[in-house]
Image: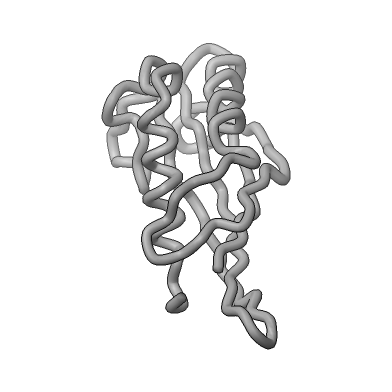
Length: 134
C-alpha cells in the first residue's frame, strides 16, 4: 500500500453516503461535497478535516485516518442537521467499505459536536471518525 490511501477512503465514504436513499432524500443528489461552496444549497454534507498518520507494523504497512464530516443546515434549529448526522453515522460507523488500492481495517465513530456558524448563521453538526487502512 502506498502512503496516501486518504483519497481511496474518501471515495469509498462518498460512495456509501451517496448510495444511501435516506441521505440523498435529505440533502439531494449534489448535497455531498468535499468543500462548502461559497453560496451552498443546504442542507449539505461536507468532508472537512482529515489527518493521516503512519500505523505500520514491522511486517505490514498501515495508516490511521482521523476525519471530520460536517452536516450544514439552515433550519430553524439543530434538529435537521442532527437527524442527517445520525443517518451519516448509521451509514458509516463500523461498516465494511471497499477501497481501491487499500483495505479498510476499521471505520469507527468517535464523537460529534454541534454549533452555529457565526459567519453564515447555519447550524453545523460535526462527526468525527477514526479509520485504519492497510
